[in-house]
Length: 202
Image 1 (tube, helix red, strand yellow):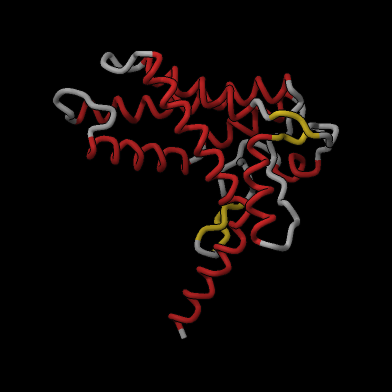
Image 2: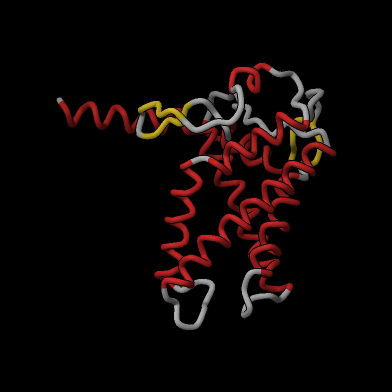
């Protein structure tokens, strides 16, 4: 999150950032202001708007969550709800991470085998690295998932129950595992795609 570059299909693309990426990377411990900038850059990024548009489009097409009519106004609402959920999730992660002294930055496992890399990526969602370098229970994903789900449920008339919100929280929490796996293997994926594209050009 809030990185200086965003590797996509092997090509480094400049990513929007409100922060000094070099200072964020080099800092031993992140201040509250740096953490807020870290999450704010991701939320204000053009990539966030693209994800919001794409996610809202899928929801509109499948009509999930279900709404009557499902017209253009509903698409606008889905788009707005995405930002409400994302903002609440980021705020929850920010506060939980700051109070629990978790480091939100991604740290590659450094392992060499696929099995160990997968294990390390999955464990990173459950166990967080603190500012001091020690390990502790990761509260950021838990608080972020619950905040996102209940904020989303509050934005709809038909889907306001606790059960609906908890199901949404479980789906959001599971996405942290997928994200951790992607970040761990992102360099490999970028290299593989770049090599395929290079072969096609030849």
